[in-house]
Image (cartoon, rainbow, N blue to C red; front, side, top):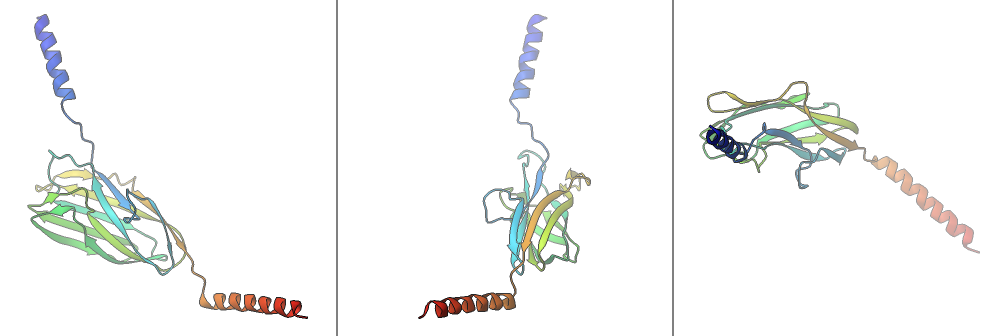
Amino acid sequence: MRRAMIGGAMLFALLEWGTVAWADPIVSIDVDPLTAGIQSALTVNQGDTFTVDVVISNLDPSGPTIQRVEFDLDYDSSMLSAIIVSLGGFFTGGTVTIVENDILSPDVNFTALGDGVGNDSTQPFASVTFTAIDSGHTVLDLNDVALSDKDGLFVFSQDPSSPVDGALTVSAIPEPSSLVLLGSGLIGFGLYRWWRTDP
């Protein structure tokens, strides 16, 4: 009896410690893909065009392969204009069909369906390109994220009450007339000083 209990405890410990526990996939928004790591804040100038990435990480390698991804990305349409959404390298092999690609303000709705694809979590799922049209502070809200397997079963569904945010600051660029006025004033001040020091 005692041997059976010890053997059972050892088997349980081996099984428990010998496996890796995987949490839910992590879906993030990287507002500055050119900087290493997931960046949650970015400052751009009014008139700049910039790209943000939707990234899926922490995938269980022995779990189901994600075949369908959908998300909404809400933004302030008075400050930003969405230009294009492009598929990243997350899906590998097979064929990918873009089911929905709606960039009309005030949000981006995007859905892609893979057939016989693999997943590469080192690559972004999608990239969204914006133009900054007005200055101020805004937030990009990534929400309604759903990841499904080939049978349509949810691998991950985001809690609607907790969107993933990316902070964005758009700086105003001085208008050319302001620069001309400033330059004229500096030239005038320099001439005045030169005139006053000349005997």
